[in-house]
Length: 605
Image (cartoon, rainbow, N blue to C red):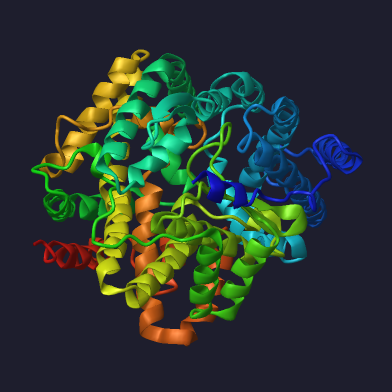
């Protein structure tokens, strides 16, 4: 691992800025301030904010709205670039004090941006009934008409402007700071671990977590025990962080007029409760099938029950492993079977070092993809260990990058995606790789590939449902009082028992899933769990359409990815004949996984 790790790339950010303190970075940081100054001036000049009645002159309003939207898009693009650049250092080196300081500086500037956005959203809400008329002679407004409708609806959930200003300032040092605490504590956590050669060394917890994929059952078990022991040391400050995050989320949701934190999340995602209920119902009905998979895996491993540390254990007589160059070649080649544009995108990402692949001390665990607007590129964080799971993860994150690529040229207010649709391209790309591996691998390795697919599927369906139950209960109880670390552990174990059931050894679950998952630690992004299930099943549904329609579907697929920043999810899906409010759609996608489970279980000795 160590020799391979030395050859793994760190991402290159030098085409964005030379450094965190270089002249070009300082110039853009100053330019961001100038943009904000200009927007503040426009707010005052045009009376931007909540209006008492319709405007007197729609023509003048259209001119003001067009100019404001153009400047707002410029500011948002630059701010997103600076944030991505700094985040690229924060997440790969939590010891970097310059990056931490720069992030803090940007957050303070962000308070000004947030205040401007609050006034803009209130303005759009007041203009809602006049927007069609205004758009007739205001080309920029017309271009943003769908996005403005989304903003107008969201404006209903706002406090008075002065209170929104106060909230913007307080969350920086309150709930908004807690994701940094969780990230810093977990990324810097190291534990002694004895290698197979008998040598003990201090290893980052991210490296120890990757050992869950080890073919050695003793290594997996000791890694699990070491990981939980490490979390015991970190539990109190992280429990404090989680209490702060959820307390902030609850308070702000109530103050802004949402019925609940969950309703706020649905509104953010442009999704309705009918869609969520259909999705969750289909997921819950699939649990017996996934429990059969867990039981079959236990049998294949020679055990009566599957303990947590064997959830990611490889099975089969042969394990697929890849060098970095092999992973790169395989992904690019298979992406090319879909479209040359996707293959060229991936090849460019590898060649230009858009990927940070090496697990190391101070680097956050897991994987993500971020957009860097200034250069119309993405950057991908991974923790590559040579397993097929990590190859699949790379394909997944490159899918996110391709989604960003499809939106190049769109203004900031029209780009992006709600969380559920954000997984569409990533799941699509992951499916390409998995199908290719199943068709090209030797027979003795196919079980391992199928295993990888079901490991991911069970995580996104079963484990995600447990996280939804966990967060729902935490929010319910946090309304009355703070929770202890023991409380969080108790709720997590109960959630896992409800979902995994008799599929796992009930004496060996993971009570600290709440501690290391960063998804719980954003005060403004609650319930970052069910969107993954939505994304998996929606992505499988979209891939099924591609299989049915062939190359003719490719332009429509690119169009879908380009349009995810605007409109409600049910409306967007309906353009492609998909009814996300119908449980039958989700059942059909889960049937793909159910058939894989049947195939897997049939391979029992």
